Figure 1 (cartoon, helix red, strand yellow):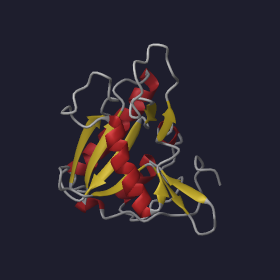
Figure 2 (figure 1 turned 45 degrees about the vertical axis):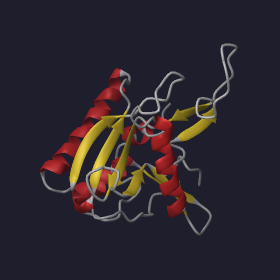
Figure 3 (figure 1 turned 90 degrees about the horizontal axis):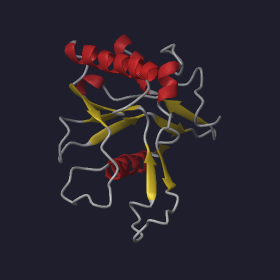
Length: 193
């Protein structure tokens, strides 16, 4: 099954959400119809946090891509954050695609020099969740990233979406079922450019 599709009867176990501190990353500018869907996701997270279903929650815009004139002391850039997520996925044996992707930046005649970090474009989902074992800090451990794709022993793949994870927490299930959340709109947000 392609990574962008979801199965109908498989499940993926998630950590107890009451122990998780969730950071919801959203894009800073999205078209009007998509903005409404992003707002609905952030409202669902806020309700879950208010009801004590999460250890904590905060909404952040994706960090910027590093630019040629950025100082190293600037806050984490998008590539560094994705690097943290990729290391977690590698340890876990899963993939962040199709929601997250790196690709080579087309060359420009204005390029002064080649820098491997600036030669890459980092595509992130419109909305994604990072779950930590405590309030996000240098010492907090990353426990989960959503969306993510699990690789099965049978050779197929199954992508867990933000919508499925939220539906599981809202209903008290520890295993979100693919397609259980109903809407395909939120699912489609996670892989958009």
